[in-house]
Image 1 (cartoon, rainbow, N blue to C red):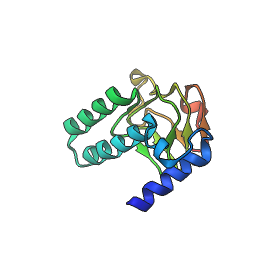
Image 2: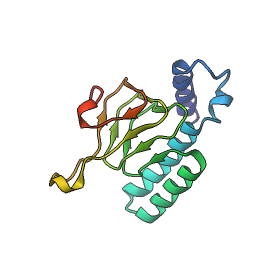
Image 3: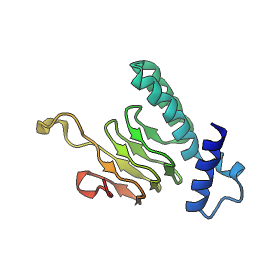
Length: 140
């Protein structure tokens, strides 16, 4: 587990020139939001939906980043700065970086399409300011 954390922190450091140490990266709100999401997602998969949403809301309160517990997120995901929203059916591949104010929002639920409502971002993707919808998927 410790080796995975070190690997993750090094992957963040490779994509962000600002931090001077791994310790500094541990203060990033995106790192905290992802850590809380991993717990919330585990609870969501175990069908403990209330607890999953509780962890989600607590993380959002601390970090200003809202990641639905049902979202599927790969390895080395990095949110740079925050104010990000990731929906329930979003799928994010490995080594994806999202910059501030990105919303992986859903499609209109009244259009008759059930199931997947949020975009997929494939691996090695960088998504900047704005809204990612089904037409702007990166490699997914």
